[in-house]
Amino acid sequence: MTPALPAYDRSRLTPGIVHIGLGNFHRAHMAVYLDDLFARGLGHDWAIIGAGVREGDARMRDALKAQDCLSTVIELDPAGRSARRIGSMIDFVPVDPDNAALIAAMTRPEIRIVSLTVTEGGYFIDPATGRFDPRAPEIAHDGANPATPGTAFGAIVAALRARKSAGIPPFTVMSCDNLPGNGHVTQAAVIGTARLSDPALADWIQANVAFPNGMVDRITPATGPRERDMAAAFGLVDPVPVTCEPFRQWVLEDNFPQGRPPLEAVGVTLTPHVHAFEMMKIRILNGGHATIAYPGGLMDIEYVHQAMAHPLILGFLNKVETEEIIPYVPPVPDTDIADYYRLIVQRFSNPEVADTERRLCLDGSNRQPKFIIPSLRDALAAGGKIEGLALVSALWCRYCYGTTDSGTPIPANDPNWDYLQAQSKAAKETPVVWLQMKPIYGDLNRDLRFVAAFTRALNALWDRGTAAVLRDYIGAA
Image (cartoon, rainbow, N blue to C red; front, side):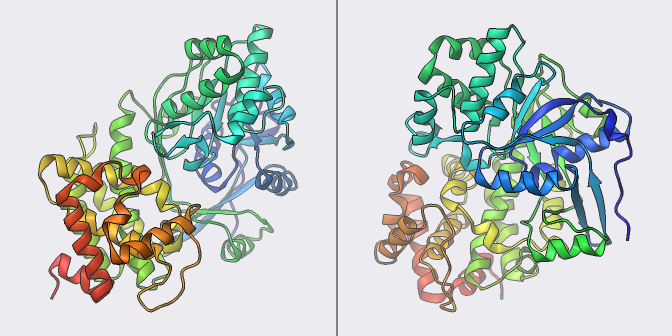
């Protein structure tokens, strides 16, 4: 097996984008779209300069610079794996505590887009308000030290300040993270950081800098020995290969005052209706992941495709999606939502991806409010069924107790694990305690219907175990 090499002369590429956060998702998503574009002879002035602000970014830089900034991407199709070397990134700036190299790179006039994948939890959102938190210690540091910022947002503000002073038009800031309204969230973080040190600059950014919204999608597991062995099977020694499913999607708002690559030529959907695609994806796919994560974790199932092959978990997913999630997803342009859900089931069931249930269970305190609670609120408001979504919450609570149904310990799997575990232990005796976590549930602990459904579900999980409760819910014999 031979990997496909870039189908263009990389020496003729020039940079147009600085991307912050060179993790697996970026290298399997945006970098691949640009690689496809360059192979068509288009957009050669839009190559990527990689960047990062964390210790892990420095390790990634070392690995990628050692292989001429090429990334190995292995598509995990059940019909057969394929590998390619992605050449759309041409440099990776040094990772420094004061971000001087990153700021200098973003100040270069030819850089017209700065993009980010800094994870869902990297935007300094106050869980109690759902808004940017300027009091976060790292942001407060950047407000007090604007010339030597430690965060991506502080560095972006410093670069925009330098460009404004030099008369260079501002770049567009494009989030590629899986967040509702990711453009608006990024705008709040950049302007909020700027306002701490320079209110006039914050006003200028608000008036002049574009923050397009976008929806991104591709299942991309973490890299470990299995993935490195796959690269070796293609004759490659690569410490940081990326594996991913064949499917990918990118829906993007066309708001780029300084220009953009012709991404529509390689399948990117440019539309003013990003929010509709985004809600469909977040509720059906991400909500689906949350739905199958915790029953699989409690039943000692390791892989997602194994959970999908379990009739109780698949039956649970189907019933929750069709009765309690999909009915509240608004229409999406040129999309049949039932077909979209069938595609999701197919993607989750791909055994080649070998995505883990533990990864899906990670960071529930950040994911549940985004992926499950909005569907629950809509169902409650409509007087619809809520028993399945209440059971999803109860399964998460039971998982955070820290043992599976068999008694196997569950290692910490959330940034707030100690707190969640304490809440779960208290909820075993008094279930409503779990619902009093205001950053997660808001005022839902006062909704008597939801409280009753959650209490029944959690008590049943402790009394009879996950399999029996799922069987009762889906009405299986």
